[in-house]
Length: 302
Length: 165
Image (cartoon, rainbow over all chains, first blue to last red; front, side, top):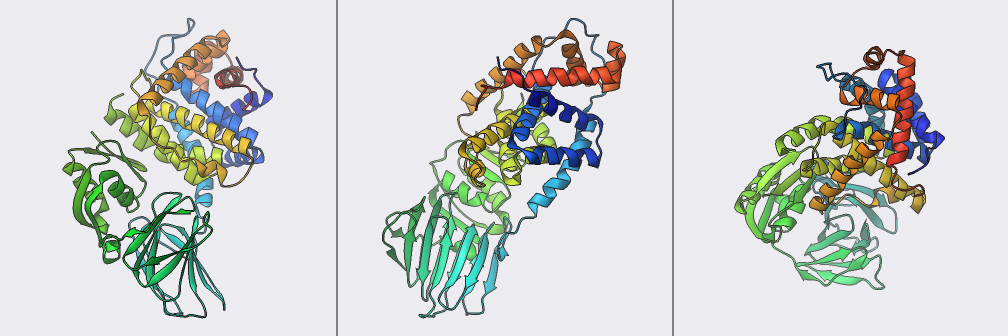
């Protein structure tokens, strides 16, 4: 049994205050209190967990209580209180996302002053830092294809988490597979790939791809002919395991796509990028699976 | 819990859940991850459950608490709290943990002082407003709020996994 601290009571008081006074002033004051210390936030999280835990758990009725009745639930108060909180959230959501960005499901083509062309895949963001010595592009998230204008005095470097790719004049792409994994894919010419954890850079040629896992560069593999089909508006699967296809499709729809069954079985099909949702349904149907959609999560399973 | 019912509760509560969790973890992206994990836990939950929406806030707030604790232990580097996105794995095992978690609430609830327990029951289970609780218990609203605060603070302490963390 843990001893109760004064903070437990203070957090409880804040929660009850938010229940009864649902005005902006209370919400602002609470937000200031939460901002002040991580211990406040932990205590408040525990108060919320306990408050809602009591409503969720199957409890024994205390002896003194009257019989149940059809009184209305108190949900509306909480709802109004959190609507005020949502205003603060909206401010945090407005964070900068680099010089160019795309939302889930979109692509964008940008012609740069040096003659290079950037194609951003779904849910991607890049920032540019060009100077006299180097053309540096930071891929903050997602997928970027670069058609590099030749300039031997000023190499173009794409930097993503764990990897830097240098080119003089060529066409290549860097794609995010997960938080720590990237593909570098070359469709024309040669690039130099250096992992954060590698001593030496490797050369990657047209028709090759390499995986970078947490800063370590793997061995070059042949590049599938449809790996960059998204640039022409199509997603093509030709025997890839279901989980891989879903991971990519997941980048084209809002939220996360989770594979719960038959994840290693191969799937096939070509789908327009604009219909990634329908593609998920079609691939699931191929393996006899169901698709269930929740906010932020699509689950493919039995 | 039937999947359709859980899914509906989750869909309905999601924006509000994300807003509340954001105010706690101060990171909208992490808040969305936690809300989604709570949703998956609800969908996988097979035990007895009185209120699906409350379950989401209960599980979500616990996940937020755990994330903040890890964050605190590791030091306050901005990226580290978000470094462990939920995995949606080991659902059967997790569902057992959730059943156990709700059972522990029942045990802790039994240990509350009688008036605090009754006020909490009327408010959280019957859904009474504070003035309705006051009427039912023949107390002033102020006193009811005191009992609720006392009860809630005690419950938070009793449900804390371990004293230091």
